Image (tube, rainbow, N blue to C red; front, side, top):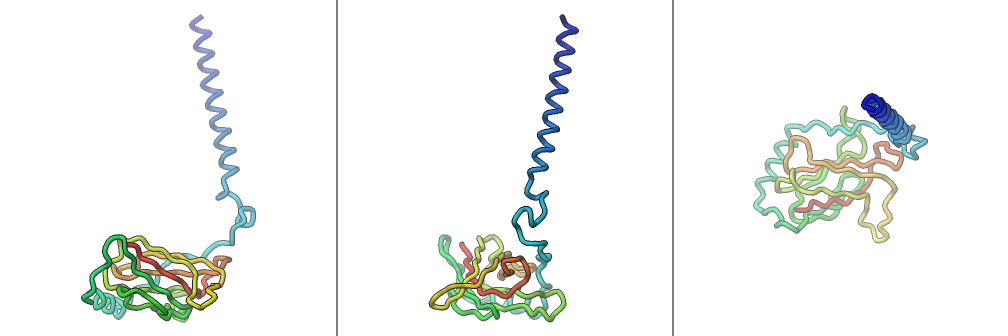
Length: 179
């Protein structure tokens, strides 16, 4: 009787292992990341999302902006900006100091890359961006936008806009920094 139970336990363990492995294979085959971009209904491969290098002039300007006497918005309030496709700061809250568009003609810089500088540290704030304009009809071009703290610049935000297919493209955007 003991030998029968040992054999049965071994068979049950092997069956469970086989089903686990088979299930993992099925799950891997069904994984959308394993599908090609066309099968998954996604645009092609994206370009790398590296930020341009911070120049000495940008670093000095950011440090000068931190010395502005305005205080950061209190918790629950936001700083915001509306930036055109050419990098012009169209509308903004009091804490936004400047906006600039990086030049695609400079090595390491691409179309659709922007920097928005504020007068306080935004590294631990919630950053939100969306494609948008400030024209009366407010029908922005199609595209995507991503936002991150600016590398080595605590009071600036890096924004990257792309076309709907994922390629670098200049797009107007709205930015909100929640405090």
